[in-house]
Every structure is written in structure tokens, then in C-alpha cells.
Amino acid sequence: MHAGEGDRPIDWAAVRGDFPLLQRQVHGKPLVYFDSANTGQKPEAVIAATDDFYRQHNANVSRAVHALGAEATEAYESARGKLARFFNVRPDELVLCSGTTFAINLVAYSWALPRLQPGDAILLTRMEHHANIVPWQLVAQRTGAVLKVAELLPDGSLDLDGLHAAMTPEVKLLAVTHVSNVLGTINPVAAICREAARRGIVSVVDGSQAAPHMAVDIAAIGCDFYAFTGHKMVGPTGTGALWARRAHLEAMPPFLGGGEMIKEVRFDGTVFNDAPHKFEAGTPNIAGFVGLGAAVDYLDALGMPNIAARERELLAHATEELGKIDGLRIHGTARDKAAVISFAIDGTHSHDLATLLDLEGVAVRSGQHCAHPLLQWLGVGTTCRASLAFYNTHAEIEAFLVALRKVRNLLG
Image 1 (cartoon, rainbow, N blue to C red):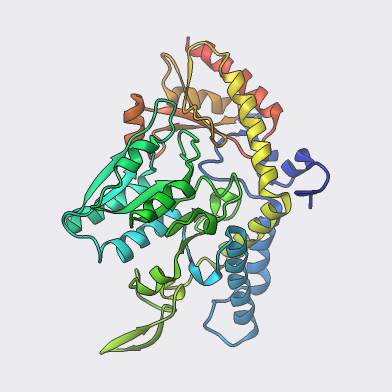
Image 2: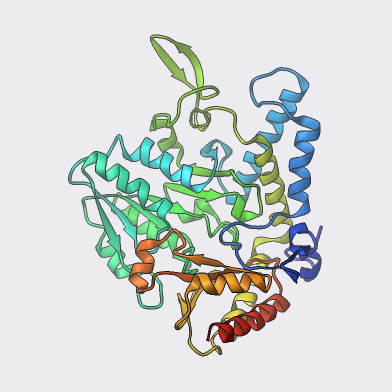
């Protein structure tokens, strides 16, 4: 493993070598993977941990007294413990699930749906991902509550004065992203949640794009709910968790019914398991969480402050050089942002641009990025998005720039 925080400087070239997929070619060109906001690539340690589980320990959790069952349960709960330490929370406050979308829906249906009523309001921001919009729309339709939207400043940062002004007495819940998946804006969620709490508003933070980029101390943020996704933080797909205050978990009814979320079932009634297990019905993605535990070990060894510093360096390089290309506009220029760059070139459709970049071996995202209201505010139909991670290199940025100029010339 590489020297981490407090040791000698990290050998980022060696780190890149930990990711097998990054060694491949696409269309005969070395792969430049700039789509980590979509999903992160996986280090060998994560792949090996998942493979080892299936080869050596595969069994269901909490359902058998035999050795394999005990090993599987220990590995699964070990992952919960690692995640709890990583985010500075208690293991019994973490509901393991398939990711942020499931986690937010759990809050919507188990906390909000039984509580909200006509006249109540849910406050969102303009920069939310659809996963932090659509569940609240569904709840509003079923309860008679309404949605309120806090707007942005021209640089893509939140209008905090406007947000605070929107925290009126009828607002019962605030849902806000920690980091925008389109703009890269890092929101001051601790200050926002503190203001919400002062006004008696329950806060839900979408941490999907924060967890891969920086140290996240959920306890210090002071929110009521925090959701994150494992596959963006170099873990397997189909993993993630919801953190919730213990009092909320105890008061909320189960979201799904079935096995493992019960203590006793009779036809005249059921006694549910304790939280967080009462929210974990059915067989979970055990191998995936074993892999996510390995991902947390990997990120911990590198040190999240080191990762954040590396990505700031890459972001600064890419932003400066993109600014030199005529006709290219970057959407989202907030002072505090993650390594996400959404851009457009005048007269060029983002899908054409991304398709031709792919032929040069460069993978970027094109489209609306599950953020239609934000793109409407930007006044564009689509953008390209280059999202960087610590395993990217300055040489890749230069290769991306060469490919981008070549494609721009082809498109005229």
C-alpha cells in the first residue's frame, strides 16, 4: 500500500497502477477515463476482496450457524463498521442499501410520507440530482405538501441568503446536495444544516459526490439524514448507505417487509427487528459490501485529505487549459468545487463531442446528467462533463486537451 497522510508524498503513478481497467485501450488509444462522477473505477484490492468472498466465504448473512454463515455475517458487519468509522458515526445508525437513490426514497417513504400534510413544504435547491427531487415530488403528491426551490448565484454556488429566506415555518424538510454532480459546487452543508435545525427543519444531505472527493464527518455536519453511494467511492455497484439519527430510525416504520427485518411474525401481527436491521429486508449485496469495506480501507490508506489535494491540483490544471480554448464555456465556477467540469463548445452538440472524444480514447459524460431543472436554469439542453479522480494524471489532461482540439476542428 502507498504512503498515506503524514508520510512521504504519495506515488500517484503507483496508485494508478492499482486500477486494472485504466491500463486498457479504447478504439486503439490509451483510455482516458474522465467519468468518475458517474462511477469510480475499482482498485485491485476491491476486486480481490469481492472475488475472495465468493471463492471462500459465500453464504447468506444472519441465517445460519455454520462456519460460512458466520464468516459472511462477520464480513458484512465489518463493512458496516468500517463505513461508520470512515464517516464518524455509529454502526447502528447506518442502514446498508443499494445506494443514494434507495436511501433518499427510504427517508421519503418512511419518514416524510407518514408525517407531512397539506400546508407543509419541502425545500430543495436548483442543483439537485433527480434522485433528490423525484422522491419528494411523489411524497408531495400523496400528502398535499408543496415543493419550494432555492436558487443559485451566477457562478453556480447556492444563494445562501435566498436559501435561508426560504426556510419559512411551513418548511418541514430540507433536501440538499453536498456536492453538485454537474457544477462541482461544494455546498457549506454544516452551516446550512445548522440553520435548518435552528428553525426546526429536518435535513437530508445527498453525499454521493462528496464521499469520493473529501473527508466527510457526518457528525460534524449536523444533518438528520446523510445518503451516499459506494460505487462512486471506488467500491462495487449496488452498495451504499443511509445514515440517520438514532431517534429517527427508531420512530420510522420499515420501508420494505420480508426476511431479516423481523423478530417475530404471526398472522395477527409482526414484531420488527431493531434499527438499522428493520430497514434491511431480504438478502443484501453481501459481496458488494465486502468490496466496499476494502474500498474504505484503500481510501483510508491514501488519506482523504491527500485525495482532495490531488484532485484540486488536477482540477486547477484542467480548468486553466480549458479556459484557453476559443468558444468553450465552463458551467460552474464556484470558488469551492470538486473535480467536476461541465462544459460546452459553441455550435457543437455535446453528444457529438463526446462521441468523437470516445474515438480518441477519452471517456466523458454527455447529456443532462439527471439534473434537468439545473440545465434549464443554465439555459442549455445538454453539456459534456469531465469528472476527475485521484487516479487520473496530468498527462491524461494533456491528452484530453489534444483530443478536444482535434475534435473541435473536425466539427468546425
